Image (tube, rainbow, N blue to C red; front, side):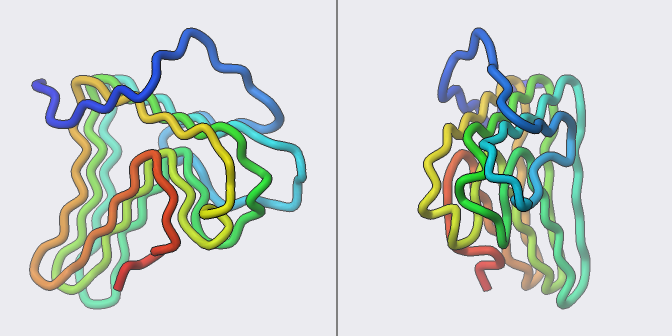
Amino acid sequence: MKAIVTIALAAMSSLALAGGSDFGGGGGGGGGGSSNPSTQTTVLLNTAVINTSNGQGSAAQQNLASNVGTFTSSNTEDQTVSATNSLIKNESMFGGQATQNIASNVGSPGLYTTTHQIALITNSAVINHAGWGASAAQNISSNTNCITCD
């Protein structure tokens, strides 16, 4: 598969894990009560992660190694997504909302958080699509306060 999107922000030879970790396709999730810094890691190899919604008021929200909404800004130290030969697709149609976050913080605390956000995406496709009156927001290794971007 030809690379549609290639983002090589850093070369990693090792990843030190501190505190809790999140390995797998659905990664991320909000912050909890812990004050220990953590690492969020999503590793995809020859994998498809597809999220869709259809209809007015529907939402397709995809979070890989990301904090979204209410979370403690000091909880996450490293956010890494490594995807090779994979498809990461999020879409909404007919008035819905598609939000895709890859190694990102979304919400007020994320704007004040110091993290290492790395997206290593090779020979893969990253697609966030909105059609027929839907809207889409995509964050890759970035922080934003726009959760729904209405």
